[in-house]
Length: 110
Length: 114
Image (cartoon, rainbow over all chains, first blue to last red; front, side):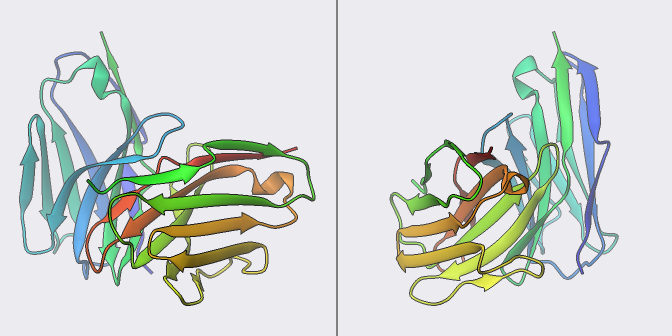
């Protein structure tokens, strides 16, 4: 059974810092890995999707990497802004099912 | 494109009543829709997968008689929480997928059972 773990559970940093969120998964037989953002009481916004054959994806200040063999992914956020404050979820897809981690609650302090 | 809506966005009901939540794909046809449940400060847990015109596939531990799922058309799936109890209070999120494409998520429905 696939299990996804995200570390840290919560992170608070001053504005402008670069930061890294971590995601690990137990079964490397995945189709892809996605990073989502969730604002309080809201649904999910897809940030980046990395196919199993890819190593990384970039979108603006966000960069996600995938090391399938070691079961790890990182989400790098450059020059953080208060508007980046949210919960970040990583999810791996296998057999058309998404398995989510518990998320990292990120707070960017002005 | 790829917008998924949910209705209602929040609902409060009395214990013992049934509540229906709708999930619609607004600009694409969704061959598959998924229903997730999220407890406060926890992750999303897949409840069931529904394909248009066929019975939903429920995850282990999810009571199919309590959480009725209907996927009657390519743009609409409904989740009915029957005889709701306070422990059913949660955030319910649906997603829709076209063929084997990406899942697009709805904004969620907050259910509170008194």
